[in-house]
Structures are given as structure tokens and as C-alpha cells.
Length: 139
Image (cartoon, rainbow, N blue to C red; front, side):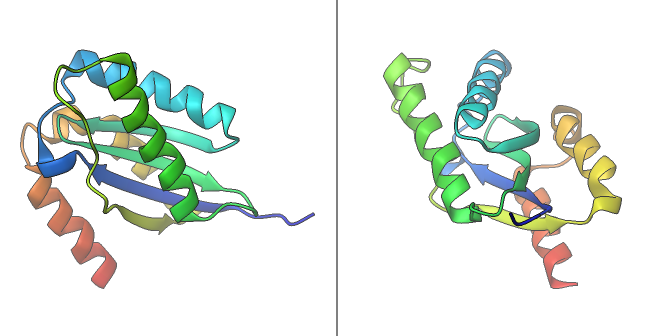
């Protein structure tokens, strides 16, 4: 049996960055995503976000790819939102996502960052945050 420990910080946004994820909806959505991940054997360590995007810290298993896990989380959650009428408008995620590996030494910092998204976005827009994330990849 393979032993694998690959941590991924994934971020994705609502379609057109619509601010659909108000605080009460985020709580319900995050609880659903956590349950969905448990059911699909996806190790979801942390989840957070703001009105137009979600951050997750995930540990991949040997038989999982980033693309597969993102489809299982994003696709199922959009379907669930629309099926349950959680929102009055039709809901969709953007097709793109951001994913970067995280070293063991940075896990605590990334968890804190994910869990403090609401406070973080009182000072910084998603666009500015995304540019910073992309610059992190380039260095």
C-alpha cells in the first residue's frame, strides 16, 4: 500500500464572482461540503471563504488527483445548492480553480489563513488576494 501525504490549498470562485455566499449560506454550504468529503473519502482539513469564493486545505490519497477531488467537491456542491433551493438564483462555480501544494511546516499558517477569510476580506478584495496567490507560485 502506498503512503502519500500531499497537502493542497485549493481556491475557487462563484461564477462571475457573484457574492452569493452570504454568512448564513456559507455555514450551511461548508457543513454540506464537509459531509460530502467524508462520504467520498476526501480528507478535508479546513474550509473557509467569503461571499464569492471558497478555500480548502485537502490531503490527497494515493488514488486521488486534484482534478478529481475538485470535480467531486465543486460539481456536487453546485448541484446540491440548486437542488435544495438554498438560493433563489441559479448557482454555479467558475470552471477554474487555484491549487498549490503546502509543506508540512506551513500547515498551521495555511489553516489560520483559511479560517480567517472573513476578517481578511474586510481589508483585501478577492482579486488582490488572487494576484498575491499567483505571485506566490511564481517565486
